[in-house]
Length: 334
Ligand code: AHM
Ligand code: MG
View (cartoon, rainbow, N blue to C red):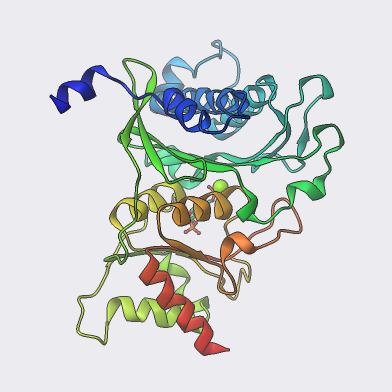
């Protein structure tokens, strides 16, 4: 029986990625090793997030009583940096938590660059709402002579990207450039199991996701688009609004249910809020891999060439047809 096969033939994330990589005869397992260190970081954060409400009572993992509690985002960053460095497969790291890029000690260097936001959705941490980790992976040509310029590549050069959502269950969504797959953490096994193979985003969606509190500062195309969502003129039903304020959760819902997620430019923040290297690029990569689109208001998001590591960009991503509408509104304007 198919159901039996599922229950007894577990496709773990490691097995899945090994299968994918084995299609490349030059693959020597480096990527799989890197990924297993990212997965370790995600498991640690999942466990810490689960205990967060109790932390005052029992302390978070790795901390003894009396020691001052580390903030969850700081703790998560430390775990990811240490896991990535010790993997021996990275040469440079960019984290939302660290102002400067981290260049790995030459003795521990590998060929990958990882850009990540260890715990995104900071405003949701203290109230137990879903938060997540986001990561994008590049290959560096010459690990021994890597410079910051090499980190500032357009997103389309990314090798892999993913996120882990610490929600009602813990879900890791990954693309290595041949589609998108979702894995759910089985806490009793401590393994991520393939639960959402080959995710495709619906071509058109019924949901829009945006911080509407910023409406008074929006540019004309954004305002027009949201107006169309609420008062469609073509006889279709209005879209529903869903906004969590955690990019990972809002993008995850968009990926599965369809629709659009936007963090546009506004008068107060002309470049929007979200960061190119570890928020906009990985999510755009996943969207395109799932059959959707991602747009900055000017261009395909993955064509953008960042000029600094913490650069921001406006972002509109989601179902193909919905993003097409937004592109048309921006084209009209110019
Ligand atoms: P953070 O890095 O402080 O957590 O901010 C990023 C988060 C995203 O997860 C989310 O999409 C966005 O900020 C929400 O911003 P806002 O509160 O302005 O709507
Ligand atoms: Mg963030």
